[in-house]
Length: 273
Image 1 (tube, rainbow, N blue to C red):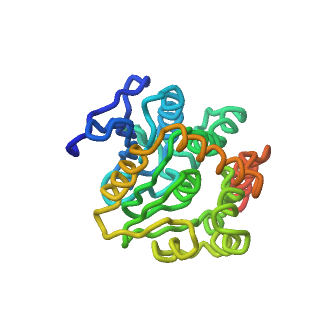
Image 2 (cartoon, rainbow, N blue to C red; image 1 turned 120 degrees about the vertical axis):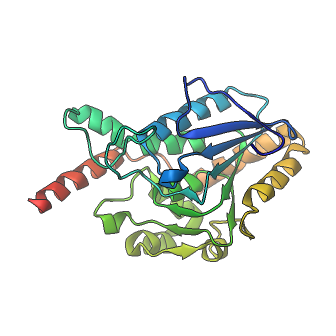
């Protein structure tokens, strides 16, 4: 464990896909680590549930003022877990429903990404991403929900959903348009091309690029500076910035976002017949 950190226990009986730590050297800082390194921190349904629960707890935590999100191992996250159900911890994927799953249960599961994105974006704390490796699909959506993004030199990004014959959901498009603008968003989402940390910084999606292995250190340094400031001034500034951004590009969730995903799955099954 990194010096100055202590494990923060969640209300969930066991955190299988996340590690949550409270920084004893910097009181007020919490670090949430996506912790499935053997799967490049792919986002399973379990991870969605745990992220939503951790966000609920943070909303009721007046002592937490800055939250860092990062990934364990060599990736921030490979995006939505599209693998098979194998019973491993945190491994329940999002790609295909179980055979006995009802349509309403499938619809609920299809909305998990939108619920998690809203939970991340709704945090009152200042949120900082320490992007320590690749970030794909849903991981890019998560990053768009955070306030400040620090990426390592070798980190790279991709939004491959259209090439996988599924629409980009999780209420991602308004958030990406807010961060990148309409033309850049259309290019990245439709062409599905990989882009570098330097590209992301040049386009304004990433705040700064740092040497490999230093994203978490830089995030903690930034957190220390924020924690030294007047807490109410920081909180009010974040709230006002978010309100202004929402007026520029409303991010109210699409009522049909999850249904587009279900429709794409159904059409995919038809094409394979």
